[in-house]
Image (cartoon, rainbow, N blue to C red; front, side):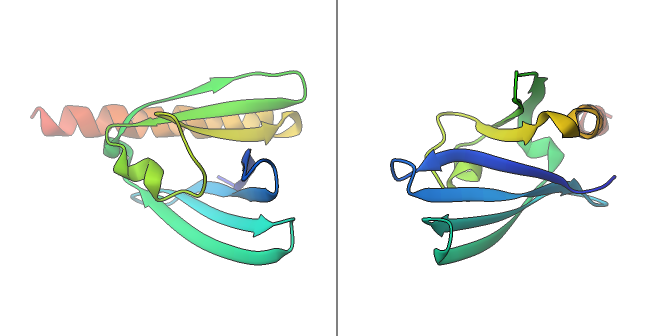
Length: 122
């Protein structure tokens, strides 16, 4: 699956732009995130690797210009690793032209969450 470009809601009253790519590797949902003040100043790169079993849920929401992928973790600590203030969930904004890739991404993560849950119950 190809990397899925996203943005996060603006932080610092819109002065800090946060963008990145999301992808799945063998074991993790990986977010490569870049935060930059005024788009160019004080850039900070971060890679966040999330085990699908650390998620409570993930779902997809269509929008007029941008779609949203809502990632809801089991613990608050996961949200603290991503720049910005997130109220119980991480909301990735994805341009509509990536809608098919977004749906596939969410489907695959949900599959991994389900497989992880069933493996723990065996």
